[in-house]
View 1 (cartoon, rainbow, N blue to C red):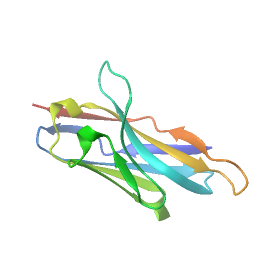
View 2: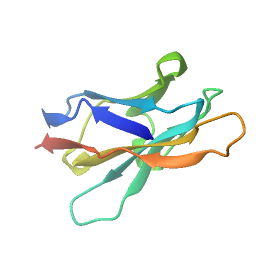
View 3: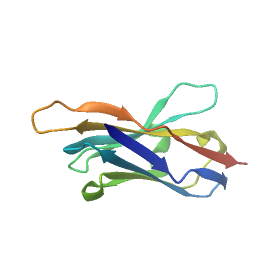
Length: 121
C-alpha cells in the first residue's frame, strides 16, 4: 500500500503564507510526478501545481508567482509554498502522486486525504 499524508494547512490572514508538505510512504520503488490539487467549497477539484522527477514544474495560471512547488526526492516528499494568500485560496488541498511499487510494475496514481487551508479577509 502507498500512503500520501499532507500537513501544514491551517488558518491564515490574507497576505500571509503557508507551507504544505506531502510525504509518501509505504511500498514504494519510485515516486514519479507529484502534484497539488485543491477543492474550494462547493467547487470542483482543480490542479494547483505539479513537479516531475527532473524538477520540471507547471502551475495553474491563477497561482503563478504566488505558489511554489518543490520536492525532496530522497524523502519522497513534495512541498507547496503559498505566499500572498487570498480568501479565494480557501480550499482543501490534496496531494497526488504517480508511484511505482516495483521495477516491473506500472505507476499507479494515489491521493492524500487533504489538508484544510482557510484564508480570512
